[in-house]
Image: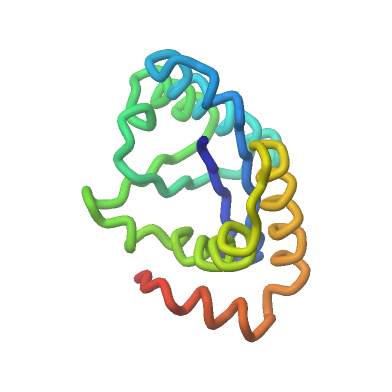
Amino acid sequence: MSLPVNLSISSSRLCSGLSPVLQETPRSFFKQDIFTSFLKIIRRRYPNERRLIVILDNFSPHKKKEVFNWCRCNGVWLIFTATNASWMNRTQAQFGSVSYFVLKSSYPKNHRELEKNVKEHLKWRNNNRHNSLLKILQKKTYVI
């Protein structure tokens, strides 16, 4: 299962796309296609005149020629963290609350239920981003 996440630092809004399809698709096929589809979804949310900057780890589908070409043509900049340095990715701090509120406190029966739980948490998180417990959980993950 993959959980691509978009965090807007300026508005402190967190969005995700959870794709149960990934479990059913051969690994060699889906990675770059699913990633490109996710980038297209994010691109549609903002005007074309606005440059999008996406911070990524060094997962090989992120570095495919087709992905680079699409990004170049659509005003999307890909910024890669150093190898083995997920702590440099500012989005990582957001996973503490997902882990605490969603993963540790529930036992979903299937991917759809997990997706529903994550989306409910993100909706709550975006409406309560100044919550003291949420701030504590985010600060537990060190990012620069």
